[in-house]
Length: 113
Length: 113
Image 1 (cartoon, rainbow over the protein chains, first blue to last red):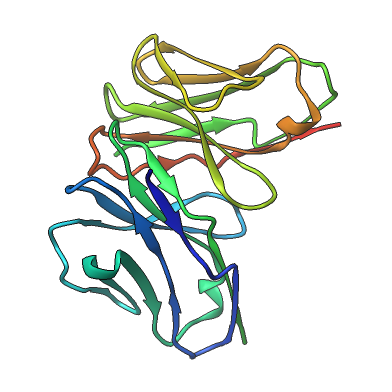
Image 2 (image 1 turned 60 degrees about the vertical axis):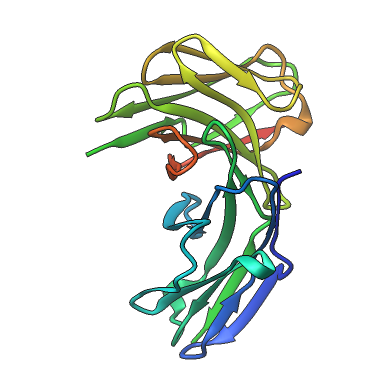
């Protein structure tokens, strides 16, 4: 069965620290897509990135970077030089047939000034 | 550009009362539509999804139902609310396919008293 595990329930860091959010997935599909979403206190889920199973190149977008390793079924998310505005719940998700997403339980990141 | 509207933002309803949450999408045609619920434990649970008018798939049998009377309108309903229906309800759309990210509305926070 498809499954996404975010083992870190809560992480607290001080501003300017780097932080990595872990995501491990399980799937039997050979082609699949992985996603990261951010949920700020306002509640709306904001799409951050999509990665397909054939592309294991790391991706960097500003202070955000993603490391996809198929061998370990992981898709980790790193925030460099964290800021208070990064405080949110972050979700990793795996696509299913029909375009449905299976979400992990989320990691609540708290960045303190 | 595409936008998704969801209302109301908050709702307090007594046990046994009916429920109707509405979601509409603009700027796209024939989207896939989804209802998710986020309980206090943070995980996102897929309730219903629809790939077209009148086509509804239920993921979890429960006290809720969904309808899609128009291409870009998705309604979540209940005839009699239970205390356990409390939560944060999120509507989302996608272009379809496993590679399409979901785009979420702002959510409805429902409290059943």
